[in-house]
Length: 485
Image 1 (tube, rainbow, N blue to C red):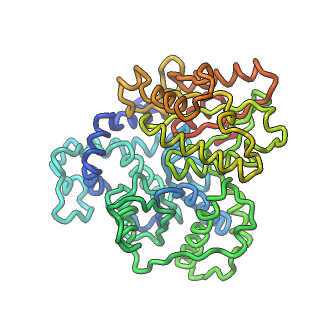
Image 2: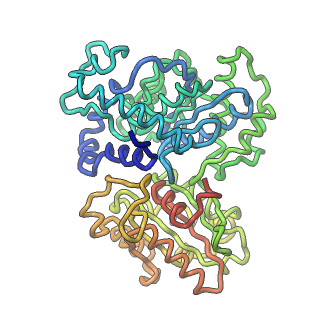
Image 3: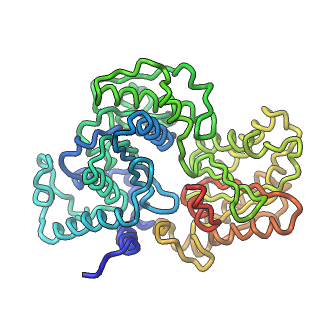
């Protein structure tokens, strides 16, 4: 048999993506169609020694902080980190000792899982036959559920298989969509679980206890102890590896998770508030695409500000970071001597007024806080670009960034992007119409930046926000991978 390649593995994986119609059906069902994810996962995963992390926002950053702390506190351990989504390459989701697994390792374990599932699918009439070692009780396969899992569930299974094969000592596991039926919840007994900031604006959880909320929103609360963590003395004085004021809350949770995990695994309690190894871990944490500043390696004078913020809360945090002396205001009082570009996309253009309005309000608040209130938010950006999450100008995707989730009709007519442009024009009526761009690909958007840099006597700052998929595409097309990832 010919050697199978990473490219083939990614193509096979992409075949498991849900298309736009399927995703819409899941949303319409309130997520109930996902409840059949759990039986697809299998058997004894406790040996992975899991730290399980969920929440409405900040779970990825908290996972990154926790991973960094543990690696520096116990360098003799092999540490696994599973997160989602990826920015440029799917193997970013599965990291060992801080680095994404190689293409060769990904390909090897991918096809071990793929072939096993394909072989089982040929002969298994139900899940009891498919997974004889799993504790399924009376659960049988739903007739509408395919035996091959969907994209995220497959990658989750691949991560478990990889970590088991590589015999990791600790696994930091970030949930996917969250909730009781998230496929990461198959782990029977995590060592410790963490819940980051929760969005409490849903009437479905009003009047419930914190434990109820943790179960409904995270679905990972399995322990007998529930602790609301206190602040960590001295943490606020550190310069964290991740930018943004909101990261101190995530770092606080990470410190408590790491302390608890180490105490359980070694029977040695960490009595110091911030041991030196914890400080080193917090300072050196990296998490690409989240409040990240990248100087363009090939185009002097162009600086990229990358934040995959895609909720109201995260967009507010994004503006706190961007409209500050650490980012857009860093050249103040020469604030006006830079040309600023916004590249933005989101999954639904009808949310444009809400999302873009929140960004503009956040910008105004920050300008006031930094004594730049005389600067009109209408002039904060010189150009705004709304582009589809298609990677290249020819309509093609980088393999790892292929998505079937965009409705074809929407993509053909750039419906979402036109709705965003209309929202911006409505919110900022004085903004020059010729400087609002609706474009079919990320490559088109990057080209706007390149042309602007050559046509003006100014340096160019580019804020990319609204979608991690968009941020990943920009990193790929603009050639930032070597320094951004």
